[in-house]
Image (cartoon, rainbow, N blue to C red; front, top):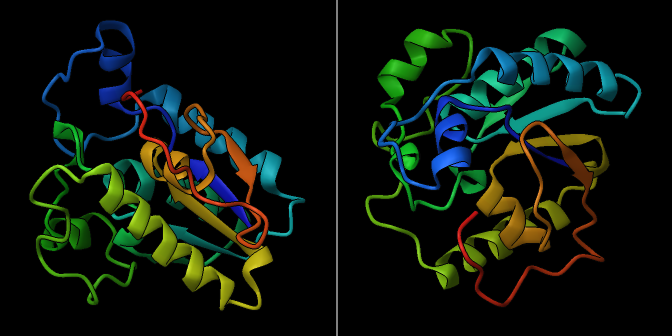
Length: 185
């Protein structure tokens, strides 16, 4: 399976320079983020990906949609691969708004307000990562899955820090989640 961080978002542009939360809720991709997603789709063309799982945050859905369109892949959505709720960008968009933006995407399994209400503790993130790991261990076809997710989730699951629109191969059998706390990106 491949874990990929979404393309550059409006939040990332400001936060990477100031290290201060700019207060942007559920940001969208920048033009650079869209370009990154198209480049990732091109690079992933021969990687054996046959399906995409995305976080419900708009930046992840936009990244997944670009890749899915380019590679003609189905997309499913699950908040289990969402970001660790620590910044304004981790306040999501209501399902009704997401349905208007992506009318062909199945979102009826999500509650209207699907994102965490409070900042997620490190221990809670690690438990969510463990639930995801257990779920994919049961998926016999996990090797063909691309997961479009976020810095905190990927870091909690693998211990790796990755930049926007980059990815890594993930083997849930061999890779254990990170156990020590970290400083925010």
